Length: 396
Image (cartoon, rainbow, N blue to C red; front, side):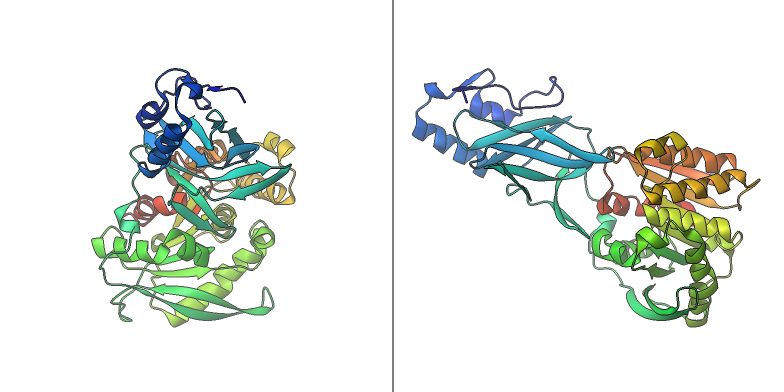
């Protein structure tokens, strides 16, 4: 490595150095031979200690890593694949920097790939305290300029609902299933409550703060008090795309058990199916196979395939099954009258498919709202959409 280091690597040559980097390295070509080694070490230490990372400014984010390695990369899961961007080492120091052009008001999740001696190790960014969990573990989070986590997704001193266990005898699957049920604060058996069925519901609780969000949205009056059934299958990759059996379970077994155990509405427009990714596919499939049962759909980042040419790059059986569902929908002369909220992240590679789905539903008479966020295929993306989506489908 030469004694001079170019501007930190970036995808857009219009990205300028962050002011903190300018203070450390100057605004031109950095020459470490012009600085006393001890002084340079002290300046880097002060740079790391005196800033929060990533450094965020309008339209850009600058990442730093301190260590010894053969290479250092930022790894993101975007555009239906793994995106890698290399850091630049600052001279012969232990400091590595990377600047990215980003969109304001968004977020994405990432890890660092550290390469040493021919081996690769993915790690959480040690300089970034912001993390997000998913079923595969934690990721680091970059929040771009202007992004704020919604206040209604944070714990507040509000009346709290609680979760109960509901045992459902399923002849469809030949087993007893245990589902969780959210019961709102102040639940009164003499009233009739809207029903929300949430696919991957326990994951929504664990990774998307579902209970906290429902508590806060109900207390603020954004949505009415409701009962939520949290469906959690053992094999979503198999069950959700094969929608026929799952739909029978939801409508013919789960729903009667809920009607027996809880005071829920019989009004179609106050019964909503919610799901993300394959859960969105299961939600749409259930509403389609049993028209007139549900009046609302909340479809987040659905793994839909409307353009069969997409299958050329997605030959996984899951996408083939989803494409068959869409074909069946296209053959249907009409769809049930309902409201649908469709959302996607620009970074996840599903934006065009979900926009096409929203257009298709709109053409079939469904009252649709479509939202696009600068985010990826992540639980916090789906969490951030909960308020707008639930208000839309519930008409509140």
